[in-house]
Every structure is written in structure tokens, then in C-alpha cells.
Amino acid sequence: MELNTIIGYKRFRNEHNVERLVVHVVQKPEQDDVRNGHIGFIIADVWIPEKLFGRFTPDCVGKVLKASFELAGKYTRVVDVEFI
View 1 (cartoon, helix red, strand yellow):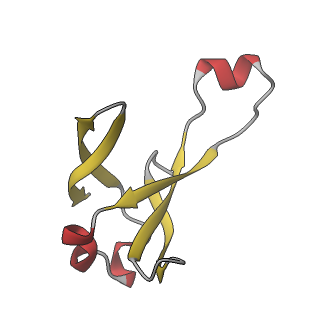
View 2: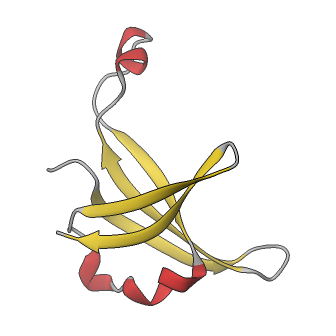
View 3: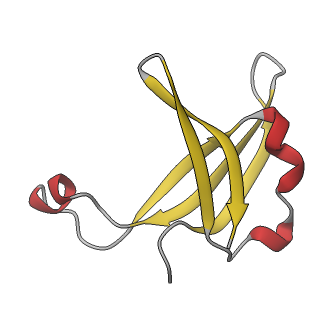
């Protein structure tokens, strides 16, 4: 399995009735994780902005997610996605 392979996603409304989309991908652990005893892969959540919701369909599961990010204060946010 390649890194950043999409293994699933969830589209839902949060407690404030705001629509959200979280994509679950497989990632390799960082060296700090390994030093702290992590074995195997990590399942990471990637939060997708509303303007990109329409790009996610059941067909994207199993594909590799290539996401472009921008710095927003002390956080990063997804600004574009591509499926490989």
C-alpha cells in the first residue's frame, strides 16, 4: 500500500450544523513515533475544506491523495487535492 492511500472518508454535519469532510489516509510514522515505540502505519485524518467536497466520491477510496497545503496562522490547511 502506498503512503497517503485513501482508506475511507466521512461527510457529516457537526454540532453547529456545519458540513464537514474528513478523509482517512495511511501514513508512515515519523522517526519520533518510531523512537516512542510505534510499529506499523498510522491512520491520519485530513480535513477537507467545503469548496473541495465535490471531488470526493466512493471511487477515490484506494487512490493516493496528493494534497496541497497553505499556512494559516499556526495551522496548515488543504487548498487543493489530486488523486493518483
